[in-house]
Length: 244
Length: 362
Image 1 (cartoon, chains in turn cyan, red):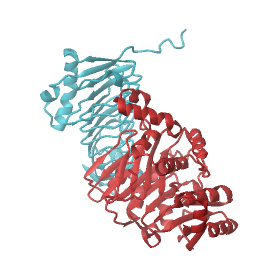
Image 2 (cartoon, rainbow over the protein chains, first blue to last red):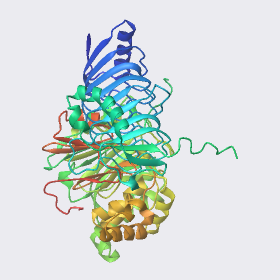
Image 3 (tube, chains in turn purple, red):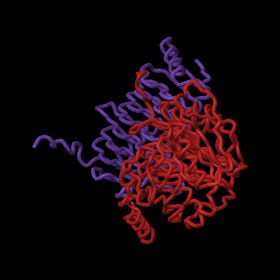
Image 4 (cartoon, each protein chain N blue to C red):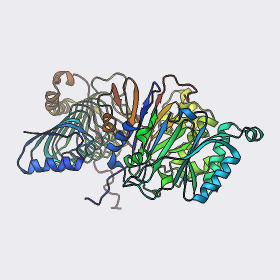
């Protein structure tokens, strides 16, 4: 295992160093004292484990496919952008546009997330990206979602609402599960809200087992609540737009 | 990849709530961490509390393109003000900073006879002269005009601009900073942030799509937009709404980042009535488009995002200070473990004030 003290290292140097280690066959890297360095883990295809202590900069784990990253701290904006495979585990909060256009792999966030999370996520057959969030989410959650699963738990919150406005606006694929009731006015016109049934709950439980294990949560307790299920009304609302 | 510039502006601000002054080092370190958010075409700082020995005087900071402009301005200043002190703002040679204009400062008081005969408030009188110089004297720009505060800005990365103006030698209780990535308008010395008028200073990340409507409105109230960029209009809007119209800060925020009509529809009747009234009366003050801003003033700062939060903003607090920045890491760089760190929602203002705020804005 390799440890890099990242304090004061410019992001280009740090990322070069990581790539060099990966090319040499290193499969476990720990980064200490990270603060603001951008693009960590981007585009890495090898099954490398990267552990980060600190606050990584924007666009971490972007275009990653296979790397497993664990962050002890908060992540900033644009994490897991277009991630293809692998894992991002955050023992803290995440900023805006987490998991933009994500197409595979899992993102586990222990705390809350910002605006525009999981927008434009895609899924194809067995390749379904998953984002699970322990806290709350801001506006435009799952906007233009086209595939995959978004699960929002809203644990440990006081008065704040679990999710913001414009939820699932433009959604045309995938499923959003929210561990609470969702007001009609918050969701996009293309979205149908129902209570998750037995079949759905089985799927949720399966997806949550790894998450709960990671953060030491009691799965049974987390499941002991109603979940709302959000799906698009039509899978291809504009399928005939150019066909008339 | 090397020739692609991946950036957006960067902001940072630090307030010592107890009013204790601290050197520019922290704010420089914070904004420098976000180096890659700017591209070297603009950097600047606002510092409050730096001129205690002249605190009764307006500190005018000026750029001159040439000596002739300076002569003209000094004639004007001598006519309208009594000048306590005039000097070149001290700078040092910095590798990455070039083509600087002449940079001067003046500590002035309005001429009492003229003030009386014009029947203007002192502040109104100063604003009039700032607008007069910036509009009518070619090659001269007053870019800072408050009391006991000053702006330092120019073309370059913020950390280089700080080095150029030797900001580590100044002490302020409130600092704000900006690294610029100009998109729509030129990168020139006057176009760097902050934009100021009297005590107000604005640093801004984003663009104001409603600039045309805002400019027409603000010019009807005597303000002149001369800095060739959208941000200055924000400064004047705050000045108009707070200083002249004396609106409570909540109302100002509702005018500038109004709730969407769909949100207003869901409000309680009284709140709805207020929100509708503000949107109706002050519709031309609504800033549309993506923004995060920090408004600095003598009593603290106000940080605000556009309503649908198209730009980043993080806030933190410890026992003595409040922090705001475009990125969490820029705060942690100078305060690794704040007591509290959070991201405000779109349109939700964060109001940071001195504990013993005098003539507060709130």
